[in-house]
Image (cartoon, rainbow, N blue to C red):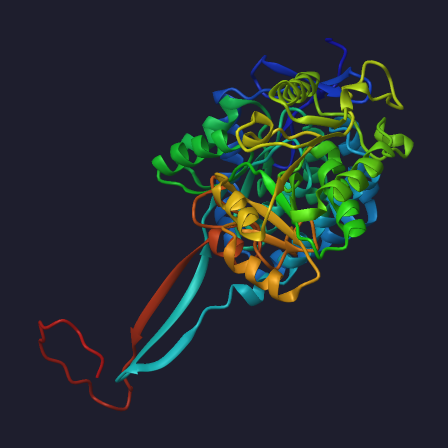
Length: 502
């Protein structure tokens, strides 16, 4: 193990091995091989990395908006030229197939492109003569040092939901990536340096809970962006906000796809399989519950099952449809849910435990699994499985489908498939969910809109990227000023009454 490469932290524009002796294994999910070790930060390492961001904060905030956006644009150009490199890293450490990894990079790049236009969104307002001789204007200023804590399932895209906006608005960033697939963070740090970002503006703190707690507790970190499971999101929000930080913590999901009787069932089946099993179901926007309304159940299940059986599971570098799960422990946990669902009485239509993968026997394999006749009391319905398990729930009516969606404690994403504009419009109003797709199974908004759910899928008041992201990483000021006419002698006098506009 001592001969394995070490994945370090990043501070002051260069790699930092750190002083802690703690390490974590990084594996290739398709082979089961330990390929590297990642440094786990201790208190001294966290202070060093956060200190790098603190030292650079004032200078970067005072850098002109034009100069900042030029650096962001150069990062965008380099990312576009070399995205295949980043995709290969993602496939090697996460396991998702190459096409999916490239898609992740492209969706992250959309936020980089959005951040290139940040000057327009940093404009304040100005009102002249709101009272006699009094003007008011507003401005937005950066927070300072901000932390980004990202999950394993999108090691490039999720950090890019946050750090381009944070950097463009004048903040310095400490990224804490998942210890399961940390190399993408170092690759992006190198790219920022190549793009001309000053040392200390983008930093990486590797590690586990100790690194997370350091960001949540450190007084110099003013804001935290987090994406992960709901229990940890709640923890991050409560601990961070308890320390006086601004926190946006995006949690888990149990996304439903409602198929109405008038839907195109071939389209619905295609999209259900794509959204349910892409990235081995390890997406917070994956469809995990297929709601068949009325008489469509048998035909829909048959079409979905036929497509599911045709999927090829294996090493993501071999042109397969679906790769392995990220770790052996996670693979075993998801497989235990399949066993629970079968024991509870759900019908196993396609059993992923029987998969014959195109890859090494030691890989963390579980094929796509389809359940029918799932009821809301089963664990496979109640809990976020985060794996390639698609559950079919049958209901009799539109109203029953909406009640099912709204009763769920999560409110991240939902989709409806229908040929009726009126039904779709009603669904948009009726469901209590933050992101809605109409004949679109994964309704991830474009970068100039904001991403985030309702209920237990979000802790905090701000969603990611878009205008809300800009506001999250900045603080507003309103200035009220009076400047006398130099040609007119001022008139004064005391007036203790509360000021009124005149």
